[in-house]
Length: 294
Image (cartoon, rainbow, N blue to C red; front, side, top):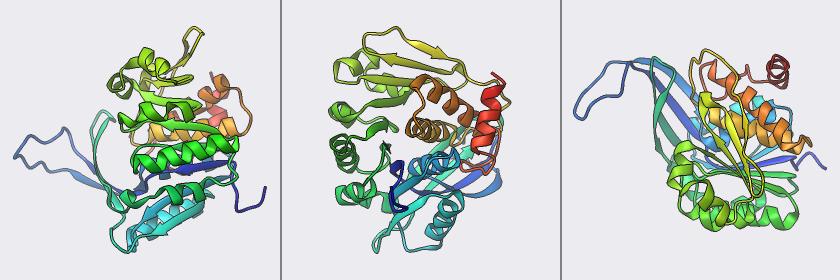
């Protein structure tokens, strides 16, 4: 495989995260004083691409950003992580922005302004997945582009992974082209639950439950529960994305799905113990060191 190709191809969103620490969410009409933590590279797609690369897989990322300094920040993050960045610069919209409220208990609330992410086309997606062994996508970009990437991945013989976040009814129509669906508890419920997902064509569903671990649901088999790693969370922003990126990397490296899920849980735990969704503390070595303690 040439350097222009990738083991994992991620199609998704790229945002600049503006993080503020605050004790609680503001009420309607209320102004709260918080502490500005800083600007971080983010977006589910970018976070997952960085996690995949930091987990040891050759990774390519397909996204659309603006012609602004925010895009420069994101491109530097991708380069530093070793991601091959296929970023198209929009002439019409700014780079996406996420406003993150980080609470004292480590949880967060996020508001996203999509910006240039809304311009990602099926053509962009198809070009971005060429030669990949694993195609990973989320739903912060146009669903028709995600569907095109998953369909093309299936045709090319790639393993396709869809993180249905945020939950979108269009997920149901894509399931025939999805090898592994990853959803959290809320997303799973919004999509009708495990039974509906299986009945609609989902072969394998990974349901993440934060500190409760993950459950692997395969048609015709008993659910398999995998415990989360016990940690003291600092910032859970991006922990789920780290899970997905590390999961895709492990699958691309030939790991059985059960072992890949353990590595993914470890990656999420590493990220949750640090500020920012793309922390440099996430490395293949850090993941394996945590797995060795299980």
